[in-house]
Length: 154
Length: 154
DNA sequence: TATCCGGGTTTGACTTATTCCAAATCGCCG
DNA sequence: CGGCGATTTGGAATAAGTCAAACCCGGATA
Picture 1 (spheres, rainbow over the protein chains, first blue to last red):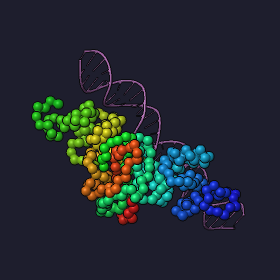
Picture 2: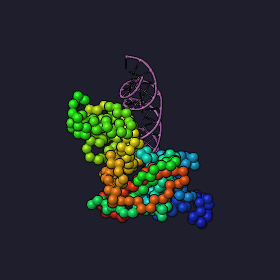
Picture 3: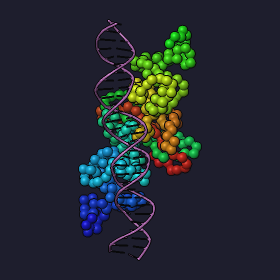
């Protein structure tokens, strides 16, 4: 952090963590070295779907010292403040989506890939009332895909 | 299996495995001792949501010798022939639903409980086309609930 | 500004739920 | 009764979550 630039949004300028720092401040998370590093990996660039292990591998590859446990912690913290959205596709497989807007997902079972569905292309028609004493936290729709032709069930 | 009754549907009669046997035959799964035992636990009685560990505990409690690995295998086999439906609610938590009809679920996050939503109360309005070369295997809708009041997001 | 302190963070080790695998066993056919 | 392939099984492997102890960030202090 020896830069003297005044720009505060660029990614490749002399203050590469300015954006990440800003983001953490606005959600009220203490900007630690690890959180800054992970925020940079997650939010610099386009929207993405990332697993904890993937992100940890990226961090290690970029010479950032972060433990896998911290990656899990951080992803969940980011999720609970609304910076990320968690998508559980299989019992041992969770993705974190940097797109937190209103949308749902295709999950390609044969390849383990997740793809966003634009909100304009899928909507839930009639929502049932939540049971007494509860409120809706989130509505997840996952359309599971397979290779080839097949019958459509709901 | 020493009964001489002719009825083929009763649960508590002298041929307690008749129904389970029938069910396995019709889906083309070899009726082994373990599969018969688990089918009986799963399908005798009302619809239910069960985890692998729960079912294994029940089997052990009922003096049926079945390994946990077999319970997992069997649940997945039953699922792939359409006898069960798998619902993944959290990364380390999967339920198997004996109700294979068209319906979706409430998941109560704070208690880990799953509740069916009748199909008449929830429907997906506009389904997007599956990408070229793929077909829809299944559409899962899970409404996550929390205790108390809260804002509704989609 | 340099140092201290307390609570928030990070971390490695451990536990849990699930899957994978190779070897032993079982069911079914002749 | 014998053989073969399907099934079962214990144990290892994997992804994820938990926990207590070490560590670090940032405000208070002087």
